[in-house]
Length: 151
Image 1 (cartoon, rainbow, N blue to C red):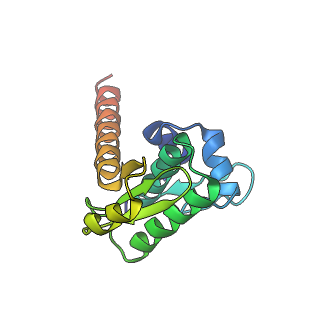
Image 2 (cartoon, rainbow, N blue to C red):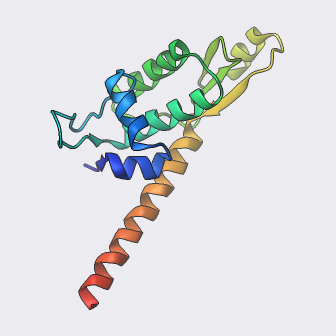
């Protein structure tokens, strides 16, 4: 199983270590591999946790309320419990106040919005972006190990 410590998560998701700690303390996203158990203990996050953290970062950056962010996380956690990563078709639509979840039948949901301005957060593209970041990080670490052995 692949897991990531807080420092690595901070680099991949592009949020501060303090922000990750705060989100954990507030119950937004707790690490599923290993939670902090006191001073000096390490949080360990799964890839699914990375997706959720990236979603929190994006939604909060677009001004969605804490209540709206919690609702988004509820849907993502449901996907995680089912053992699968969010599909490419999973999207959140919000106008900053209301939240809509799109899966495969986006016409029905879009009709309900009645042409209001919304922003869309495609979870599938976040998953692909995070996967690329993880792969780049792993390649960088492998190169460092090889160069240490040569030196």
